[in-house]
Length: 319
Ligand code: LMR
Image 1 (tube, rainbow, N blue to C red):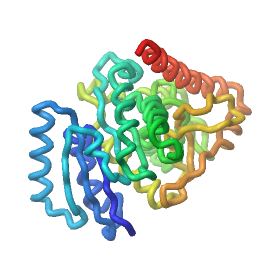
Image 2: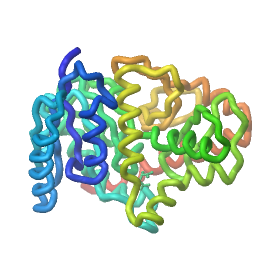
Image 3: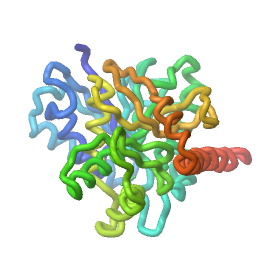
Image 4: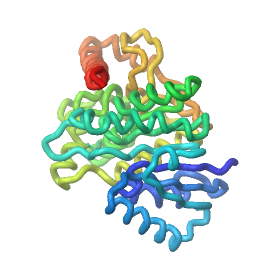
């Protein structure tokens, strides 16, 4: 197995602190993989001081699989020769905000970082978490294409596993049963939540999942941290090693029979096949479209993604 160079943007933040031990303690990668960790954050005194402190602590952890750790405030430097980049960076949501309210503040970060991907390995894999994560992932891919015209769209995903884990976790605590939840559409309160091969969820359960991020934000006065890190580790592990389970991930969609605008990053059920490959399960949504009520809900969340993307494009037209 090759070594992996992994960059985490927003590297000094809370999710990064929860994620690093999972990545380096063999919760994601088997012990035969050596990891070079590159942390990126903005050039703010507090962020740089935290990165320096993290470097000291990582030395003290003496992780067997950590080959090297570097940090930077320049994406061109931080992305150099990376195999995988986990994008946590960006302003976090505050109580009273929708994730789409962050588009203005965060969209341009993903534009700059998309262009900086030219410094990474040509086949670099990207996972976007910073919100609004679906549209930020699209912005990242669109800008990466301007410098790496042949980069496959399958190299770009955004985190939906957090919503899937929430669905499965909450169902288990309420009903005591394991299920395979799926999430389709946008990581927003319009997301479509379903139960593969099981009874339909009631409306209250679905609302709870759609608004779980807000629920946590209102209780903690800060957004989710270690549940996000756990979901990232599940996503990366399944993307790298494959999974028998149906997983939910934001993916860049191609031409389709579902009337979804090509090129959007839409959360879909996928089959991870291992070695960073996956198949998008368009057929699951085709089947759901046969139910008019479900079709209306799915179209709503797909349309919201198209609107978010148009909104971002409008902010760019005057530049
Ligand atoms: C979440 O779902 O917890 C994250 O996307 C953070 C947020 O703002 O909701």
